[in-house]
Image (spheres, rainbow, N blue to C red):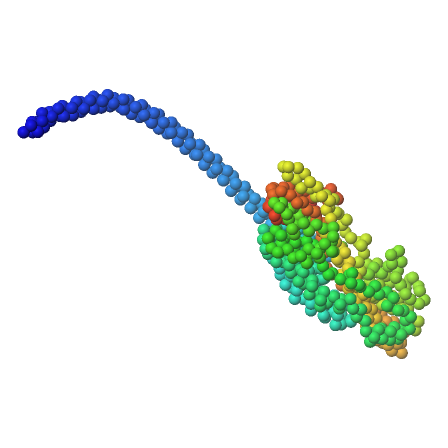
Amino acid sequence: MTLVISQVILMPFFSQESENQADTAQVQNEQVVPSVSAENVKSEKQLKKERLEQEKLEKKRQKEEKIRLQKEAKEKAREEARIKKEEERLKAEKKKKLEKAKKVKFNDVAYRSAVGSGDFENALFMLESVKKPDIALELDRGMLLHFLGEYLMASEKMESTTTAIDDAFTKSIMASFASATLNENISSYTGNIYEYLLVDAFNALNYYNMGDVESALSRVNRVGDKQREYAAKYGEIALRDDSSAKDEKDVADSLSKMNARVNPDEFLPPKPTEKNLYKTSPFADYLQIVLAAQNGSYVDDFIVRELKTVAPQVSCESADLKGNKGRVEVLALTGSIAQRHSIPGVDSEGRPIINSIDFDPKKIAINPNQGLYINTYIPFGGFPVFLKYDWPVFDRNSIQSNVMVSNVTLISKDGVRSEIPVLLEDFDMDCENDVAVKARKAARRSITRSTITKITAYLSSYAIVEAAKSRSELAAALAEVASIPALNAIDLKEIADVRQCVAFPSKAYCAGFTCEPGVYQVEVKYSDGRIDRIDNVVVKKGKPVLVESMGCRAVPVDEGK
């Protein structure tokens, strides 16, 4: 009973306490509410202000964007107009060039002069008029396009020329060595040994300048393969004298029939030696090393050793770059290759080269530009007979260009470095050695061919004249006059084979700079005062970059790229 009462008494107490707590909470709530509402009002004002500022900034941004787009549209319109104008100009220029090309006719002397002076564009115009150019002119076309910066067209032309020259070269070697009286001029031109090999090296430069390093490397790798094949198969044959007892007897018998006391062998050029063989190309070796290193390919130690042997002055540093360094390799081409020509018919002092009996200057026929005429005056014939012999010769005094590379400079924001370039390959010497290998064989063929053919024709004519004498002196005189054109025609056919690619450069120089990765400018200074500037040369870590300078072009002084 007591327990129940206690519960009844305590219940009101707890109820009152709960009510007091609720009242306190209500008062607290009423005090807090006004404070939160004030902050909300302040926040809304701030947000409104920020929204207005954002809207203002957005309008400003939209206005600026509109102005920018309008400006870009105007610039785009101007650029399109400029491009259109440039296209129209190029189109008109191309049309003008085509019209000019149609008027320009190929003339060998004018063509060689244009190439020698670096006027490659005019030389190219002349080639356009040649309907069926031989391999030499096709190779010229490829070289001229390269020098004019038309790398795609140059590579296409060199590819087709390479195929043609490869097919014809080995056949021509065997055919020419098989016949002692073959007239080289009547056969298709198949290229000289250095042309046969170096066309791939120059084509590698076309691909490199188009940004295709891998294709460039594959082209220059061909050179070594072809060179080793040539040396193994044809090196010994090239040095062979190619004289036969039968040919010598036929020549001696023909001369004895004319009572001609002359020994044509005394005019023979010297025998070629191993030094005259084109065994390796420093130019191709250098390109192979640089391109392999740039492509990240294996650099052949054999090629490095070979280059160090044949051109010890040339650095092979690109083959093994150390640390974080890169390297700039500068290749500079100068001049126009020297040209072979016919034997001049005079000695070094300008005197006629002649061997005759009853020497009479009035009876000497000398052509100062072409061919050696030997007077074999025949006492019983009544008039002199001249035997014309001709073969290719090389005269270093005839080299067209003496321009050299005097200095190469590497310029960056950190400073300037200079190098004196070194001679990489002398293409004039390549031509000279090629002539030395061929001249003696060509001379023997000319002596054999001209002596037998001319004397046989003369004796036939002499017999006709003698028969005519039985009728009358007038008939004999007419027969003698009639025989002269036929005899002269034999001499007209006796011309040395002096065909070659005339658009090869005279020399190749190189210089190199090992440097930090970055962007550089290269200046190549030539001995004639020209400066070739190449900008934006990008050097990467651990790799070389190749820069080609065309010093063989006819360009103004201080021209930059």
